[in-house]
Length: 353
Ligand SMILES: NC(=O)c1ccc[n+]([C@@H]2O[C@H](COP(=O)([O-])OP(=O)(O)OC[C@H]3O[C@@H](n4cnc5c(N)ncnc54)[C@H](O)[C@@H]3O)[C@@H](O)[C@H]2O)c1
Image 1 (cartoon, rainbow, N blue to C red):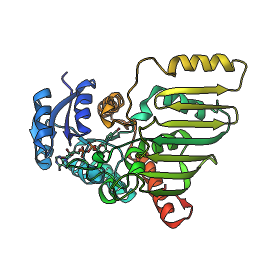
Image 2: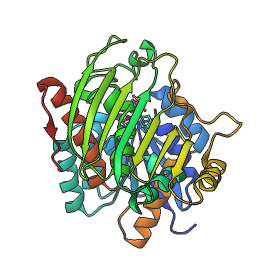
Image 3: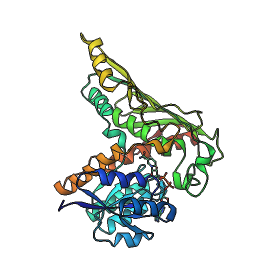
Image 4: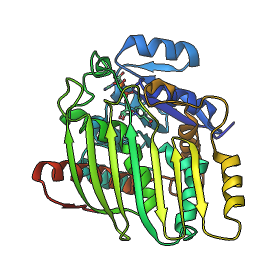
């Protein structure tokens, strides 16, 4: 394809999945990968035949690259993305956008100045069931929104937090937290996106099952901007690990989902049973075991990543905004840091933005 967009992937943990997604996305081409660890870089170069870089600044000089996928440790995201923007590259940015809103604000300002586009990874926002739930809320199919709840009872062994690529996890300065910022940011984002944004929080956190610095269990009360109430619960201590559970309560209908599977869809009306049957047939549990990341982070399938990468390719060609922009990826980070602040102060904390 003549106008294929060239991608360079920085960091090859989760970035390995990005390489696959780039090759799957229409109109995208994997030009290069950049990684300090040869054991991660060599197999990718062999598999995809792409260029290899060990120096990020050097990769940024490569004119064949128009987009950089920033998939390094969370606390390095803004710094690395700012370098990419200043080199004139568009960006695919892994979650969380960074670990503080100050750093994200600096990135937002740089991206505006450099006039590049950023596609943020929150793959749950591309999921068909989540889109159907959002539509049921936004069109008031569920009536007045009362409650939005997210539960993430996951399990990670101590070894997950150890070794060359594990020891940054569960730290304050590079991971920005533990179960809430690293694993839980998807659930926080999903409920804030579905519920229309969070106004204030009250939280509690602690370390319960690992030798880590930050937290491996957090619970919080949420007040949404539209008046609904909610809760978020995240842990990586819960052996053997269960799926994410989302429940939405409204005056005219309620629904519940378990990871990507619908459990219940009850909407007031003449066709209450029929509607639930139809939705369960479409989104209910299937026979085959679906992707299960509750205990195994490597089980993630990159479909959502591919859609977000493909969307950025189209956004570049059409000169429009990407699907998930930095401004909306900032809010979950603001919520998470407000929960930590509330946990420390014992007070309700208002969200800034
Ligand atoms: N969207 C998702 O579902 C999902 C899933 C897992 C991880 N993530 C995110 O992906 C990011 C990376 O997580 P991970 O688990 O892959 O971490 P990781 O530590 O396994 O991988 C990061 C890699 O970046 C490399 N790196 C760091 N600085 C570099 C530099 N200057 N030049 C070249 N390479 C460099 C490291 O060597 C390492 O291999 C995190 O922000 C995490 O939150 C997202």
